[in-house]
Image (cartoon, rainbow, N blue to C red; front, side, top):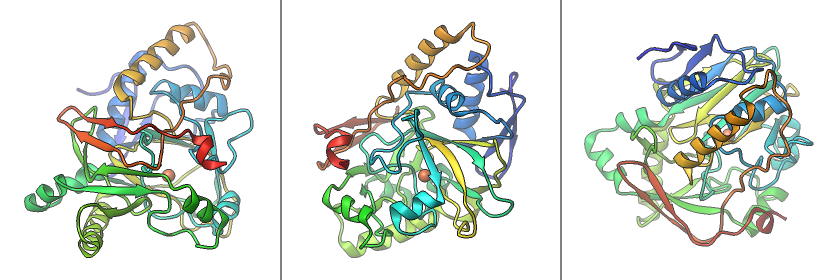
Length: 344
Ligand SMILES: [Fe+2]
């Protein structure tokens, strides 16, 4: 089936599509939401050019697709004033937080949490004349590109995810020290089943995955090297050149991404929302979307709704089990600590 309410143009061989013929400064109708979701599930990351929406409109747009989270489980950097959902992505803040200005390694957002976000929406506010591209890679294609015996092995494995799992933060940074005192740790299957598409994805990433569990350290190291090479193969990636007002919307259940690595020469600020939880995925997504649309049906323009309470992150120091099924993933969690207890 094609698209009747939006235009979708594929941008790379395995991942990415540009969506046009839609104005995100106005509320979307159900047909538009349905087709954007369809394009997202197929292409894993979708791009909207030149939308020029504000913080409130970004929150409202995001809420059409799921329950919006707090900006970040660690509370750093500070959310945008008045918008607890929005995490500012800014090289200057990176430098303050991490002690360096690069965007860190390839990662999927917040996989150290028990309920990592299902999707993320990034909006460009101020981009440089050169540099600052973001890249994404398709974890489903990466899984399917493995040989059958290695896929079968991966299907049986589980991995630990933790903040600074790869140890890329400088040991003497205050942020690294805080994480060391209050680690955020989860165990996820190496292969997860997407709850909406049923596709299998190689769900590990260099940013958060510390090791494969229940194997030797040498085996873990070699397996991760194999998997990390696989998921970052150029064939499975797309690279996005930002302009002010552009928006990228990606599915964290089927992708990983690489933040800009070449911004030391510039100041950049991007607004960022990490939205729908996959812990309560399907039902929560649909209920919140329907509820919002009933309220907003007659609206002509977005109105700020930042007072809407974002969803909390769940994380704790106990490992949890993640059960994969044909229909998706079901989290069986230990009692979790709240965000504030860990981060402050
Ligand atoms: Fe990210």
